[in-house]
Image 1: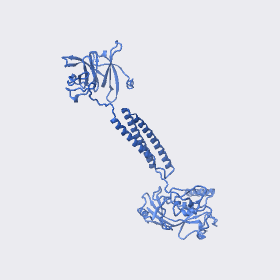
Image 2: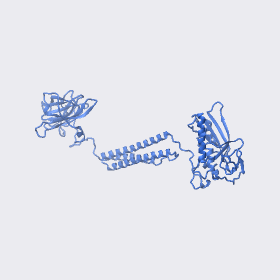
Image 3: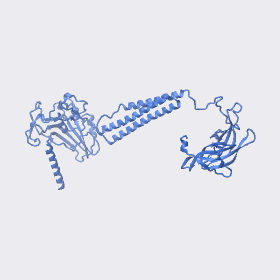
Image 4: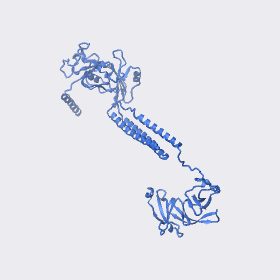
Length: 542
């Protein structure tokens, strides 16, 4: 009872809608149909509609008082239009796709795909060609052009056609319908979301005239002389409406990201030009880099505009306008210009007469010293200290302290072997500082570092040695540098500043500790730091 009640309410709503809007039938279709289907399965169903005619239900010549034309009514022949094509439709259950024989028929041009073709839409547009704003895409087909060229208004029929004055409404062995069937799809060879999908294809089984290849193309422009003149501008719908899927938006986003990546590549080229111009003092390289950055920003803005333009086209179902001819040319030109400029300035910089960063021996200015007496693989200098009184250049290297004669060597002492003035096993010297007549050496350690006090012992001129006097442990691991700050007023003692790492190996921070030289005495083995400098001010160059 509830189902009957719901259906009754639906029928009443439909009746009220028809009465309130004064709706009446507009088009009737008549055709002869042949249906082919297997008796054991419903996977494939093939139908062929021949002798397709569309009838104007609002014909003024009808004498019927019914709400629609009766089957026994006789109407004027000008209100009946016979379509120039037959319809071959294949319905496939599920998502199996079109069967192979459809492709074979298409290859022989026996059938031609016609997406969204509708018999009812053909009749409605033919009988209302002067009032509709947009005609279906097949209106520009060669076989349909004469029909639309002679089309009439909705309430009048052309009585001057060279056809019989009247024809019976019902034809023998034909199918008549005033409502469009809902179990077929007008999409060619594309599965719909329903349980079955349809394929509507035109064939030439019943076409008259010399051209029997069916609907094959859509003219880009329909000649104005073929269409009736009206006060409104008519247009023909596109043959293949754009079908936007979610992956289309993802493809648009990927394209946008690739454009941004190309823009970043151009910015990288500009930065290389900036560095090259600064190192080689080439002003024109900086100007070229600036222009490249401007071009990269322009490409980024252009990519954003193209991204949103394509979103607009997809949202409005536009089938065209996605091809970009300008952007790739600009992008390719920018990259080529950037690479060419980089190569040109690099070549100029290599061949320009600039100061070389490699030390070259030059008499009177830069003389290469001999390192005889020291294994070259064991040499790792980490600092230098000049002893003006003794005329020596002291160089700490791992557990050794080497001594070279200061000043530029001459021919007599250039080949003199290097002296080893200290060799303390287990030490790893990083820096040396003179405090009075004593030398304080900084030794780096894995867990903690040390400050070692050394003094000179001399046997003869070329046999000087530094011997260890005392050592103090400091709470810094990985100590790398040390500097002496002498007293400015003479009342306070000098300070040793040591830079290293504090904390354990997992969480270590840079620390710059200050030690009072006066507190370094023989009574203790641990050096207590006097204070700690703010490393942030040091990092800022203060």
